[in-house]
Every structure is written in C-alpha cells, then in structure tokens.
Length: 95
Image (cartoon, rainbow, N blue to C red; front, side, top):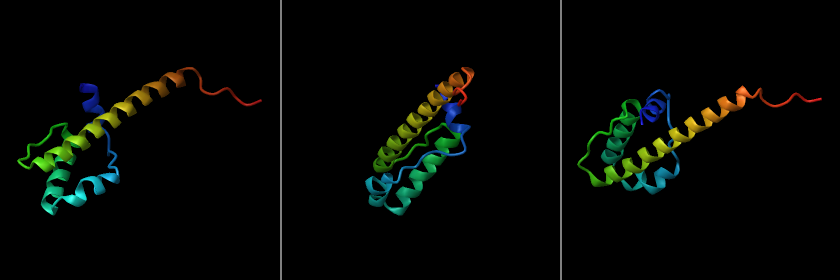
C-alpha cells in the first residue's frame, strides 16, 4: 500500500477520463463538481480522502479514486517490467 501511495503522490498528474463527464459531472451541480474535484486533487497529493456529506459526490469520487489507484498500480507493474527488460540489454541490433 505504501508503494501505491508513493506512486500516486509523487506523480505530477493522473488520468481523468473524458467519459467521467457524461457519466457523472454533467449530472451534478457546480458545487458538487467543485467538491468532487477538491477531494480528488487532495487525494492525488496526500493519499487522504476528504469526507463529504453528499452521497452523489462520495460515489463519484470513490469510482474515480479506485481508477487512480488501479492506473498507478498498472504504471508500477509496467515500470518494473521495463526495468527488467532493460537489464536484458534491450532489443538486438539490426544486421
């Protein structure tokens, strides 16, 4: 879990999928969107999920934060695989 935390908070950004707009944000009020983004960005910099009293906001941020965690985990696995492949010397030179 600590590796995942570091993978997230040490990264300059995160993926924000465009389908979030149609699925979630377009159906929320401006205040709900603002609160959701505040919580998401806070999480991305601290790995701490701020509390909300709005069930809709809570459901949206839970989904997005799960995606951020999954994406970070995939990046970490790809990084490890790339490092291992690099140790093998890379692709053979062309003749």
